[in-house]
Image (tube, rainbow, N blue to C red):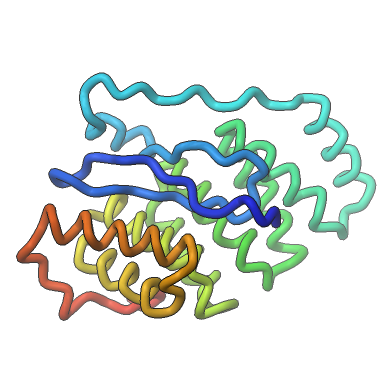
Length: 207
């Protein structure tokens, strides 16, 4: 995981006004996060969707050759998944994240990036299930919690649940980039929905 791969933010419109974030635990390229295709119509008029970075085909082939020659090694599979994720080829990212996680099932970063890939592939329920697995590995994995809130808000329209999760991120790690992003999300949510009731929201990882 690269230390510079932290939070990348983009201002978004959803239910009036809500700022959205999506975390890359390991991706080498930090780029704006956008809603998955079925939600992009909610973006402000005239907002341009940035083009994905060009896939490094030579690097992808090199990593695939390594992965095939070393079937028990999770590292080249994770690197391949990151490469495809950066190029917005989420079906291929999912394939390699799943293989990496099979070989290294206790890696919360790989698990969370797989969940993000599910979300970008219009599978919010699978994303939430994967985040639940990540939190079973590490109950205080704040990148997972922040992503969980995003999918609850943007993918499931569960604003109360999202608010609950983001508040937990702030409580756990107020001075980290994740905590600061969660605070901005909470401030935007309160501004757009001053009467939102969070008292009955479910805790992260519960059904």
